[in-house]
Image (tube, rainbow, N blue to C red; front, side):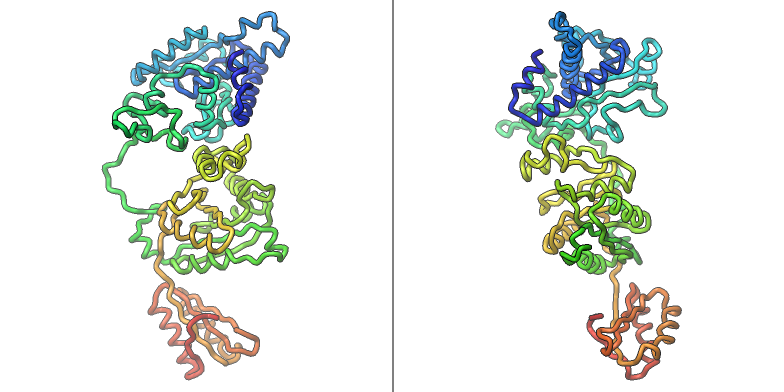
Length: 505
């Protein structure tokens, strides 16, 4: 079988593994469901073209595994019922390629002119259909929550969605097509990288030939798969958007009285006393500088459940949760798994992040299962900045920091402040006053207690530098007049017994 032979002969170990996994899914589908109750949704695009040839290979391997070598020539093609949803918005090249391909490989075609859902309802009424092969890949709008075998969504006709290439990337798709030397739609040689309708699809500008500015290079020459959909036209709003984050404009952010954050540091070595935690202290200072209140700092073990429980505790009460440590390919790097568990989602390959990793450290980082590119599905946003070697990961209101030391933390923090998607709007700054006295605690305690009631919007705390040293009273708030008022009330209660110091140290 030419597809199987071409992949087996390839030196690309990643492609061979992707192929083996996908063909296994195809074989399982043929083993689980009657052949006449399986269908293939074909749309003429690159993904479904890959799927067509994987189905052919899987069918061949499925049949030969049952000892039917006597009919081996008849298994080169797979006469699987094929569904094509024809639309007047389709490119003529897509239509012609679809009909040509169906004829070449002897596929029994059923053309449907309705929308996908209505067409399926009619199809399943006419012919029992238990499973449909679909060329969905992670990153597609409808891929969230899907597995290689996924029942149809509630409200849809009941059938099993079979997704053999769910974890394939843009690079994997083109590696397969070029290795197997199969024909694909001619639009891909004209610079189209993702094909929708004639109304929302243009050649990818990144493939424009700089020599004349008119022609385009083939789709397989796009080096960055993250930009596969750059040729899809985006609707723009006529309304002027303000520079905002989490729905709050920069101007409004300055007036916020209080926003809160929590810090979770992952590290057994800190709990063992081997390493001192400097991240918690540094982040507290940085957050205080932009007017944020830190409600909670915790150090947890390198365990998925420990991380998940701490995130679960903080994500509903704080505006942002910072998670530091536990990122990477090692067995102890479980932070992303903890985030996924806290939000009740799975880890799934993220093609965009995989491309970033590939450009940074080559292909050796991921193995064949993209371990380092597995991110919490459906809730992940990548925070980009030109100074970052890799984008930072944000899941809902949890920001995962990759810093391994305070210098790296400084750089990542500055990038976050420069990225409005981070949600770190500057709030109204804190003002503080620190007063030192040699008076005993018992003497000032009643006065301080009354001050706390009268100035409830001012934080009033106390500490001693040493057991026999002076007592420092710290006053912190957003309203300078209120802080000064509380300080004046305290000092006037003990004439000449308090002096101002520069900090709480």
